[in-house]
Length: 378
Image (cartoon, rainbow, N blue to C red; front, side):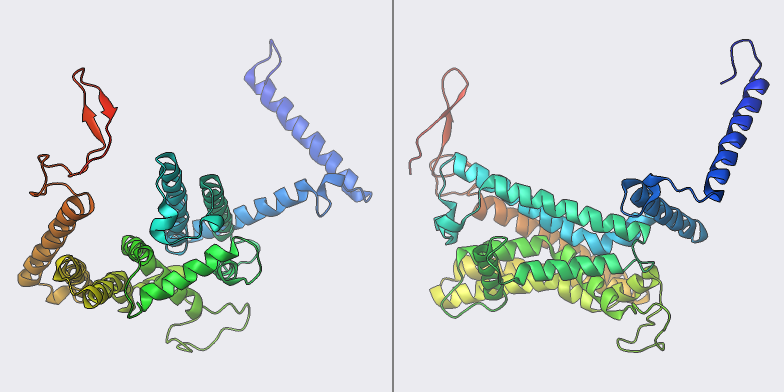
């Protein structure tokens, strides 16, 4: 800023002179062998400079490829969307556990959990926040291409670390809960002949809600397994998976997303729930609600595969297939919504003394118009 009484031009001259003086002093200090302590390796200033150089390198690469923040997010979401959704599901489960404990609902007995090994809501939510923090850290390393120029090193390390955390045999990170989760997952994939437990039904429904995230996992694994992490020794084109190992992440993601494995992985949770319903029917012999529920999950398959056909063969996607897709998605949406309202929520039933409500009421209105707790009755 120019001193009082001077023109703006005088201020610019003073700032330029001050800049020249500081630069001359810095050059002279370096010439005699001086080195500032804050620039030593291991200091905070040193790491700030390392990160700053990585950010500048990423910005230069973005300018060369005309990549903005939106492009970075679109390029990286396929690796990180599934882990973020999994952490959010874990956080919301902690909120559910908090509500269950507030209303004195014995969820552990309903799901077949060991009460002594169940986590508290605070522990569940805290671990979910820690998971989000770790994912954010790997995403930041992915965006700045640090410490390696190859951006796919960061998501590869994240997936490998997650796998080893899940299977580590040490008595850390709630080993009993991890082992029970793996057992229930295998029971969902291959239900035993004895029947399906309620916890397996809940886990299967959670997988159907995360079918899009599972498709992202398929694309991520395809990219990581098809990518060459060699620095200076490029592999021949078509080696291994048939994809060029030197393809950039964007082209590699598009090639993996075009695979027919994507709709198959998307439909896998619905097929697992469909099989669970058939196993329940074989054990109980009750066509309702088991076979009707199986039909609900089967109705999602035409929507998935007609959409995939329209994506892979756009020239063959005519008016007939479009009408079939509209009929399929309308039927599946209405069927699923009606099932949730009638079967899961217990509303809109005819065998109840309360119009459009459940047979068991927990709240009623008093003459003053305020809601008061009401003891449940049948």
